Length: 539
Picture 1 (cartoon, rainbow, N blue to C red):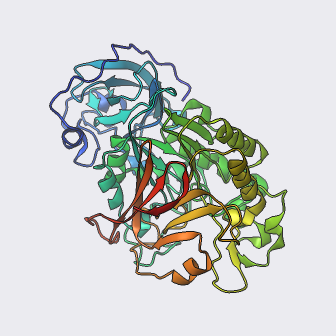
Picture 2: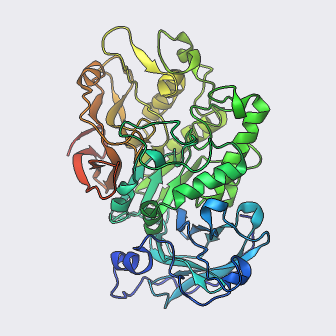
């Protein structure tokens, strides 16, 4: 958000300790839904946002932080006393104060300032805090009038020349509100993590009952299929009211990137899924894309450089965590060629092999290849959306491939993997969402030759809720037809990753159901990648 803010920076000393753990902080400031601690406070919000004499909670959508760097992080909130009525805010700027502290009780403030929440940005605020210490935990909050937000926890990245002992994060995707509860996020918030990576499908664009999960639709979208800016704002707000999602945002900084459902199912560049309704023309689809990007930016802890200009948004970026890991977050929608052979799963689609077809666009591809080649990190992570490994979904001849995944852009995948191999990029790891199942795959020099070199590892995370409750679905035939695919499971959840100098460990964290709240979580499988040895093995 292009607003000025005042900042004062204190000493970046490490926290001397307050006797409160992060769990205590969450219980004090955020445990009861993370909707703020202002209820009942006498204040002036009635003069700014609500009816006279009425105290209104403005922080109903929670708080968040994101895109951490060595000296700072982005802080986010949005003022919305009536979130399902487009916020119900006055049509004027509202000052919002923010604070970052070394301790949960804000006795040692590290930075603070004021930012204007503007009506043209749905009264969302993005604060790019600077001057913090590297690799350190901080706590933050917002205040407007006399209303305080919940307290959030965040953490800066280590300096590029630092070599941290450990990095832990979780990655997730695909949270269809109607298909189930976001219980996995509740458990994620209790993990010991440095950050969260979200790989897309943060919202779904469908109207009520337009996409039915296997266990039914247990809660409903408000409004129709989203088309306009107001529609997208309402949909993001509805998702943001989920207390489990708010808990995970408040507990860790996030790196976010979008996939298709933030705009329209299976869209590609300026081509929608169907040329009908809001997508009747290229111009009408680009208007829809512009609205979707604007609302997405307004609801994510993103830096000013990601603020969209019309239908264009710079979403791909690189974040470094010392010498331990470097994350290249991709945009595999905005610049891709239209899906080959009419999309879907296809047999004998020669167009998918066309070297001129691109998943990332030439500029982003060059950025990615150059970044991987010159990285000094031990683990090089590509955080992206769709299945990268070859996946023949029809065991036995003929082969059948998804045209929306990298199989539909095979030449681009070949260029990427050949570059990683020839430049000897250390420990390439690909993180993927989209398919609502958990997979682990070897990335091969030649997927049709099991004896060819293994170049890297792909971890494909399941959905938070999309498709509903998990099943005992069996994919043994698909695994046999694709020997580089090492693991499959159909349960909802996320993947937790912990890496050090010698080993990367991924735990598959799953809940047994999402059709009702309260599910427990377990680790169903664990895999390890050894430094310098591509390919995952059971841990």
